[in-house]
Length: 383
Ligand SMILES: Cc1cc2nc3c(=O)[nH]c(=O)nc-3n(C[C@H](O)[C@H](O)[C@H](O)COP(=O)(O)OP(=O)(O)OC[C@H]3O[C@@H](n4cnc5c(N)ncnc54)[C@H](O)[C@@H]3O)c2cc1C
Image (cartoon, rainbow, N blue to C red; front, side, top):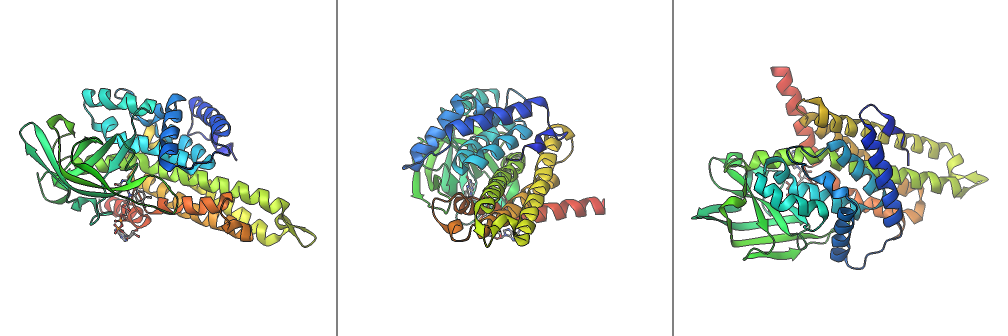
């Protein structure tokens, strides 16, 4: 894996140390790992990442927000080795992000140490059957009843659905129209009347479910932030983690390039190898170029978020958009270079081909990222 990027000025010594330490952990713990049972494997990965101390990166340390450069390095490194390990790590951050950013001292104390140690599995429940990209239209409702909130509705495509210990749930509380009438809640998985209605299978398997909230009662203090602040809380959480989706894509793409380099160097073609062929070399060059451009965008956005002190929405959207779209092309080129082996189950590039696809859809589809970039440009131009 090309590690030259760690010398870039975006990083501090602690980031290079993290890359070394986690890289070694992955080599020791993730190689040749085979999972029969997805749920148990995910639980095991969360526990092991927690025990090794890496999940601390996913949560706030007191008032200090998670360091986005560390999250990005961690996701890139994990994704290089295993899509499922990256998933287990990432969801601890996304699922608890609202608590890290907006939770009370009590909420942080109750949940973040458990998330960081791997004792509690986190989930982020925003999407509904009738509302995905357009989160302002959430229909799940939360009504105040004395000292409780009562939630009614349905969420779908919820990662960690079925194995999570709590679902950070967005629901309509009606302070205003659309985005102005939403709130965020911590809903424990064992709350009465909360059901896993359906497990969903996707091309890169991980725990995913549709949830039914049928009069789920939670205490009044389970709300995160103020009533009506849910949309802002959701969007700020997504903005924090959006860059790291790009970082995961980068890890997948780097692995695809390494697999392609290794395969092309060994595979015989005529009197030489595939790597001796000019067309192959052109492809390899394009793959490396796409990867470096993604890395620059991802770590620029991560640095900007940590220390830049500027509104980071445009940079985060550019990083996610470019890194995920170009990783798809890089991986596709690696599959093509492998010929029949590239589409054979058990071959790494075939796994990567499935792993990358959903990243261009979740946490804001590519079209939504373009919209964020364009709106930001126009706002600046019209100011
Ligand atoms: C593997 C996986 C894991 C997920 N995990 C979670 C999770 O943990 N929690 C959670 O809440 N959700 C999760 N989701 C849901 C995900 O966030 C939504 O799928 C996503 O927001 C898109 O919503 P949708 O599927 O309803 O598609 P729609 O909103 O119906 O959009 C369909 C397509 O329309 C296009 N489109 C959308 N908006 C625009 C636009 N403004 N302009 C032009 N074209 C547009 C895009 O191509 C998009 O893919 C997950 C999804 C997947 C696939």
